[in-house]
Each structure stands twice: as C-alpha cells, then as structure tokens.
Length: 291
Image (cartoon, rainbow, N blue to C red; front, side, top):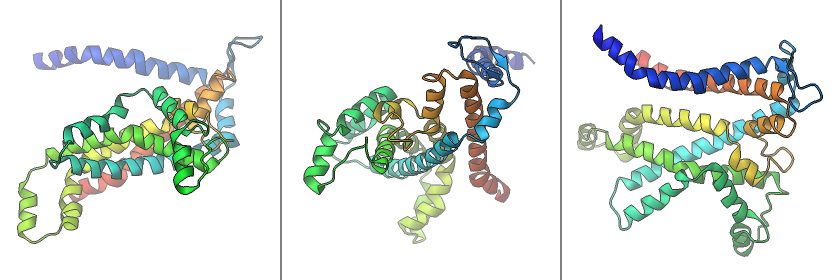
C-alpha cells in the first residue's frame, strides 16, 4: 500500500503537467469547435452553432484535398526515412575512418528548429541564388522552380522532411540493433542462412517494436508539419503542399476562423489516432495472437 502511494506521488508532477498542458487545452479546443468565433470581428463573442463546423469539415473540398496531399507526403516521407535510417544504422554499426565526424554531421539536422530547416531549404531552392537550382541546371539541364512546379514543390518538401528527420530514425534503430543478442545470428550463420534470410526472419522480427515506435512518432510529426513547409512553399504553388497543418494554420490565423480551425484540429487528431491504431493492429496484434 505504501509503495502504491509513493508511486502515485512520484507520478503526480508529470500527471499535473499533462493535465494542464494536454488535457485542458484539448477540452478548450473541443469547446471552441462547437462555436462560431472570430475574436477580431465586429461581434467577438462565441456563438454556439452545434455541429455546424464538423458538417462543414466533411464537405470542405479544400480540406479533403489537403488530406490527400498529406497522406501522400506522410507515406513517401516516413517510408523513405525508415529505409534510409535502417541502412545508416547498419552502416554506423561498423567501424570506418571518420565515423565519429560523419555521425555528428548526420545528427546536426535533428537539433535544428523546423523554421530554421525551412529557411535553409528556402535559400537552397531559390532560383536566383540557390545551390540546388544551379547544380541541377548545370548537371542535368533541369530548371528547378518550386514556386511554379507543383510536383517539384511536393518532392522538395518530402526530401526536406527526410533530411530533417532521418537522423531520429537512425538513432532509434541503432539503439535497437545494439541491444540484439548475438546468439540467434551466430546460430543462423552456422545453419547456413544468408543475409536476406537473417534480416527477414531474425533482425526484422526482433526490432519490430522499435520500428513501430519510430513509425508512430514520425507519423504523428509528419501529420502536423507546418513550420518548414510554410517557410519553404507557403502551401503552394496552388494547393500542392497545403498539408493539413498548413490548412489549419491558414484557417486560424489569416482568416481568424477559430471555431472552424478547432473543428479541423479535432478531426485531424481523431484521424491520427485511428491511423496509429490501424498500424498497431496490423503489425502487433497478429504477432501477439501467434504467441
């Protein structure tokens, strides 16, 4: 009984922080989502409008289009980061000249704020002064202009996200690979298994929890991408990079439509939870049943 009280006492500061900075803001956003509210309008009062904001979300073509673009962005970014992160993690498991320096340089993007990342890529992709347009033009004769080409803008935002967050995936998978016991691998080599068989039947099942946790983190982060995309493309050209986070930002701040923006935020949170649950059911539940 004493140990239970001590445990709750130690958890109390964390629970209070989560309550005040997590639960209360969510309740407030949920409350605002049932109102029409523009604090800068002639009538700044909240007007209760039942579920009108949610009905509007369902039939908002611009929001639905942003969902599609966001899904494509999340798919390409997260899959690429997972593959590159695993390859780099395997490379860092071996000794090679300059490993410490390269590992430090590889981790640097991770400590940068998203707004800084967007600024760097804005400078690198500006046609008149950017290094990328000049290199692509000199080497391949390709005119990179993310302000005019929707495909180029989308691909650039995906590459920017990969550059920014692959180090996180690498560090997570390195920790998972280092913790693996050597006995199964030695036994597999004695039995004559090749590298592909060892990866699919030993390495991948053993690091699956770490992969799942990494995908969860990156999925949630990618779905709320705002800062770097706003700095790089502003959501354009057109709506090519108007991801869900950018769409919410533009509804809340330039248009000062707080009620509708809150409703979109709640819907996106729900969709994120559903996506994570489906991922869990698809990857973890079958393994638990076999066990």
